[in-house]
Image (tube, rainbow, N blue to C red; front, top):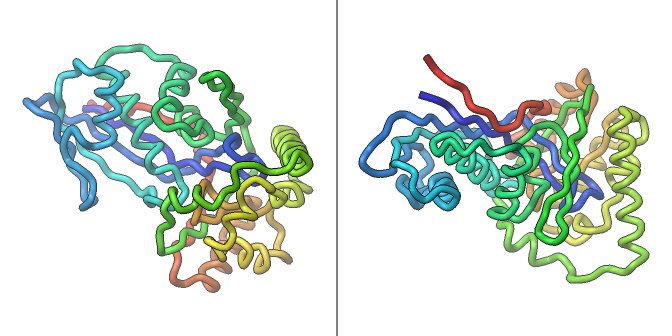
Length: 290
């Protein structure tokens, strides 16, 4: 038996709309148990299919239609419809499943290209595949990417109890913004990448909270975003941003401050889940059992 393990991801990091994402230590795990007559996947999520209609199996068969069916066992602690890449993790798990069972020997880059073709957002799938922080962009149907190794950073996630449909969150975004706004957003993203890659964290907060691409249009859907920034304005953090399409609000923090920030947010939002997270450095991988 093997286990496929895929991390959650937090995309749209600040001004890095559709381009900056980070892998975190919440996981989707899929046990490949044994060969069977038909595909089946055991799990405890009521609304998810348990046959070949499941996204993991559908993705694997989309990549390699002639795979022999297997019995799978799935478990996850990634909240669904919360902006933490739950569907991306399933797609990546499906690619890993096809790669293993079909002996496809895909490279990391090939996995990223395929996952983006299936999911459409490289800032979600790329960190899930290779871990840590990934800068990515797509042009002419190809994804260009670069991994950045972050150090001395933890995260505190505020995960609201009520989900936010991605379709609704995307629906509030404008089709265009001005050239001046785009130039400002691009510049802030460039500065953020430079600061994080150098480990120059002192002024990250002033840059990561200057998005112009999506947060101004989505913040009314996620009132926790501005509330958390206000609550933490006197705390030493590296900044707060809306994770993915929301509603999760993510705060980058020094490792030794994470428990304090988590406790403070738990007091302010007792109805929400508040996670102390760390960066996943491995990305998707396979664990072989004896």
